Image (tube, rainbow, N blue to C red):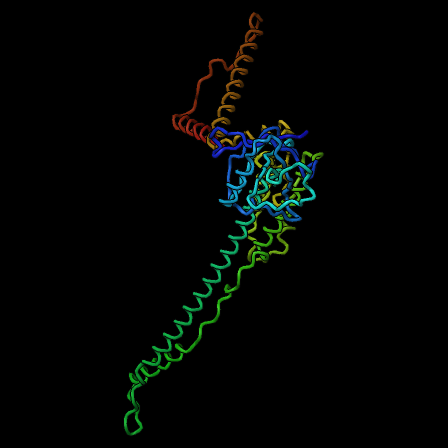
Length: 410
């Protein structure tokens, strides 16, 4: 008999008390397995804790019945109904990730014909089961992204409305200024004008009046933001595709490695030319790493494979425990700064030069030892005088020091 002992605690750190010993009632063989003992130590009023279950939902449900005879279950259910909150427990599932068992306060009623004879209806409890708690986090992340996009769209609309109001105010102010301007100077009697200065002032006033009546043209950027077009639409479509591929990879228990290919040129075909600078290869790489971390629950490893082209990339995703040792070694190896690499190169070159000098000295000594004792043999260049001037010696020393400094940073 598949019995489970349920303990109750007001806090995860508090000592739990016995609540009930239960077994499946409807159906007799539930679609999930419960451990021998679990603790209800968390409470919530989130929407996912309600007693309703959709057709496409990840949740599974079952009716349990108390078999211990202590009659503690009805009081606990009444406590949840009065406070309108649900109790739930987290435990390690058989396939690895942490699962959830929820006891909602608004559980659906069970049909009377499904209750066996001798079983009290008050001893029956409705529970919900979720195989992986990370599904809740993914749902919350999608909702937050949707809310963020809505907020950005609202802010864009508000900004456009403010710009239109400001333009209308500017036009009205220009109209008022043009209406309050002084009229042009009157023409003198006898058909003569007011002189050269009067004509110049009149022309200037007429020009300003005409400029005040010109309406400002509408800006080209006053277009509502659409997250499904342009650079944002390209990134969102790529993220959805990668998420679907990784979900299929997670559900297949026979495959432990998958490869994700990224072709930058083919991905940005539908992006306008003025927005292509925003969609770089690093953006697509970040989207892949983000989805691997989210769907794999920080248990998968993503490693970029070497490639010959800058606009193409292949990322290998390994499930937990199936990553090769050389890939882990490359991931854990830190990249040295340029200064440390230059110093290491200088040390290697200095050691090689020292070995060469020692080799030359050893060769000279070997030649000298071979010719000792032979008659009519003269050794040349053993006590050769340096015939360079002081200026040439200083110049050679300076060039040698510059070569040494340059070798440290190459």
